[in-house]
Length: 454
Picture 1 (cartoon, rainbow, N blue to C red):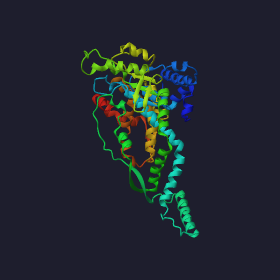
Picture 2: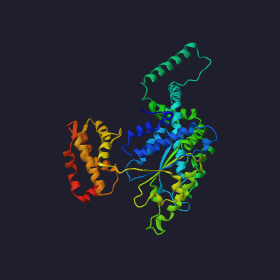
Picture 3: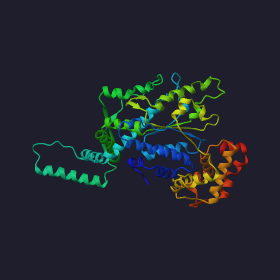
Picture 4: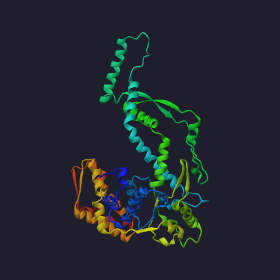
């Protein structure tokens, strides 16, 4: 059941968990925590009085190996809420003074996502009206141009109207879609320039194209396109005219501030390691943590659309913490992530469920891909169990990459079928335990090959 944006944010925690169960197997503790966090967003919106501004979100720290669903839980949560969502990797950031991304860029990314999201919603509202206006312009372009004169009689005027009505009828029936017409499109006269600047320059809103657009008049050029293509171009132009961009920006800023979710992955990678000795690539790790503090705690970040307060943005951090622990984070940052959830490693039984139960399971995806070529792919139960067993065994023997191991195994298992799909005579392909064993036996027999391929 697809929820609208307004409905999604009002879901109760059990309903949120139920929605997450459609795509993510297990991890009940993590689902409960994020469900409560999302519901608290709605509860805060219902609060009246000054206390509303004092209620801040309880940020979450997810702890668990890769491939167990940390990112997917956060992404699905944002989709349910209709909230702006960005995923960033802590390892990409450096503290001020080092070459790399500064931590404030995550907030600017969130605002950009909110702008696109709000803009899309406004476009949906005015699309029908924009299409009507676009069709009207197409009709004008199709109608023969002849200046009116004082000598025109009623018969001539009626003839023109008759032609116009006929063209409109043909246009409505879709019989003119391939006809070529000329339309005006904006001409880009600003060359692309790469600017090497000090870190943080983006916060000044430096946009060369926008600067020149404000100074120089917009140029257009004539393009000859089909009516189908012209309708898309003209509809977009009409939507641009109907939408108030200032209102889009204002609403997007509010949405980013009030409902935005920032997922910080690999936060354990900014924990200094004992082997670094305070030099090399680890030198700025603690500095990155300290730069994150004011963002997560609540501060004002400058974007090209205006100031953004981060007080009510929900931060969900995640890390495997293989060689470290959450207590190795600086104490101040630990305090900004008060809710801690440990995600479980995936078992063989989990892999079986992951392959079959979610609405976007790998088996369903591959079936859908091959159905486009008329091939019906069928997996037996023992084949699915064998795939799960292989994934579990390899994860235990080599690096544990969680459910991502299933992608690798499925790709190798179905490689020949995917390659020869167009030439396969049998329209129904059955995958059994024997098929899985015979297809992967050579790889599994060679330990070095297993590490390299699977």
